[in-house]
Image (cartoon, rainbow, N blue to C red; front, side, top):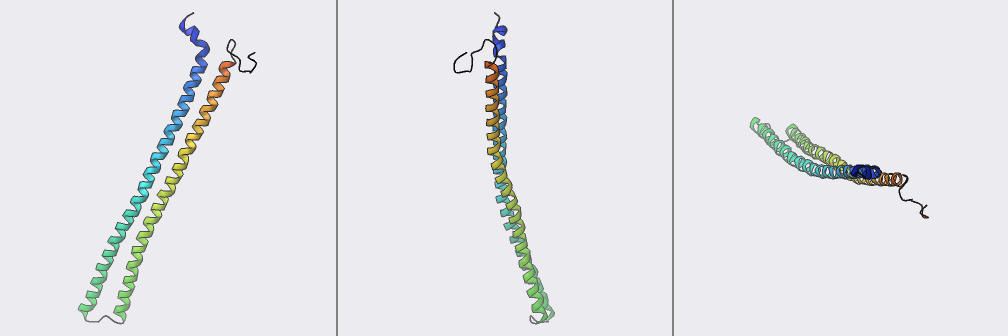
Length: 161
């Protein structure tokens, strides 16, 4: 009996085992990719918060510089610092502070989005792995049943017949 003739009854089992291994490897790779992407999204979340903080600091400094120029202009014009000059300076100060708060808010919203995406990817990572394990198990059972149902192969029944 040639090698190929001897191997023929087992070809289905070998092919099924190869498909099962491929399913497992694919699921593990998808799971690893999702975990990696989740880590990257977590880093993006941190970076968004840090960038927003740095941007807010720059906006605050620019606002204070502008406010200082405004006060200096009022002083140089000799109009004093009360009345309408005070109101204009006060309004500018409030608007500058709102700009800082809006900058921080935009950064926190962006960071939140990255955090949500990271959580979704972590969840999908486990789901991909579980799905591939279930598929691989099903393929292994189907392959085994197909193999044992061939003539001349051992019976799967408890009585052996």
